[in-house]
Length: 419
Ligand code: AMP
Ligand code: MG
Image 1 (spheres, rainbow, N blue to C red):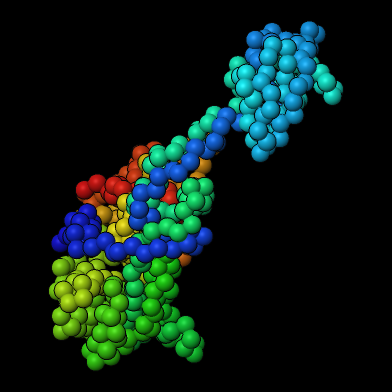
Image 2: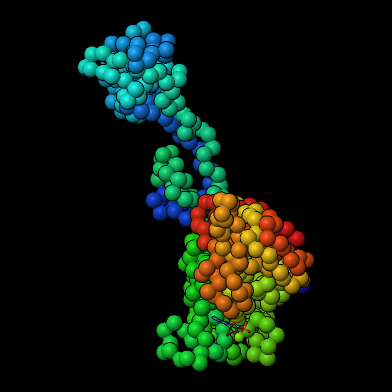
């Protein structure tokens, strides 16, 4: 049986990165950059004032106090967007607004609040440090500097930088087409009439949302009953996409037809069990024809969500050219004792809180049954309980994966799980 890490490596080795396409920068939020972006300008383009105040020569105001202010002649009034007309000489100051260029000769800006001024004279009451309140040329962007690298997630700040360097069109990676199918005779679809004896299909929607959260709009194939004919038709339809995700019917039960049917359709199964909890019967396969990836998730709603997190999301992010493939992990102090069976890496639903001493701690959300989808509602992290570990004491530093984050910062380059 594969470990989580070897399963992830097997899957990622099978994934090829998609080609790129050009999109408007205004439509690039959530996409992954497919080019290195250089700055075409200095920003700020010159030294500018960070405050409304007075541009001065520091030597003129050194040691000024309320009792004995430095008194300077105001010789100019510089607004943002203006070009300064005069050079400061000893004993003079220029009134200056935030964002306006620092005039020749000045080396410091004094805030309005630290002065007492009339139209002609500026009394400096408190000298700030030499050089203060000046934003230096190029402190944000420098011409020809690499400002965003290929493989970066585009979030609001990245989008702002694209706009600043005038990239109205930007190269991003194409997104895969992903099909989602649920299987099981007991399942009731969202639009089916309510039947108390049936099990409402959750996996279609949780996995759909997991895909949407990383920028993929999946094709929903609905529910296939546990009969080989119906399953085959639906799986065939799903194989028209780049990736097919099917949940349920992947164990060894008498009515679990997913694996044999996939085989009939030319899918080579790489593995069908992974040493993780929840989600033991998870299968990964490929169809050479058309370079298709197939993920078969266990039916239990928590298992299918966790397997999608651990295996499908990294694969999809690799396809979309991302550098950071894995959910962000943190090291955090455990807030309670945790006992577990050994043998499989256990992703335990947990939530972060701050204890009496102000320290962040992690506690389980409660019962860890793989059918208790409500445990994912209350969770904001997954405690990664190593396979060989049977007990962790309160106070131990543990690894947790952060759930529900989006955009830059939600993912990291290294897997974070050690085996
Ligand atoms: P299976 O993997 O088909 O053996 O299903 C395992 C458990 O998950 C069973 O209790 C199923 O009823 C349940 N299950 C399977 N598919 C879904 C689904 N799409 N939504 C909610 N529960 C499901
Ligand atoms: Mg089933």
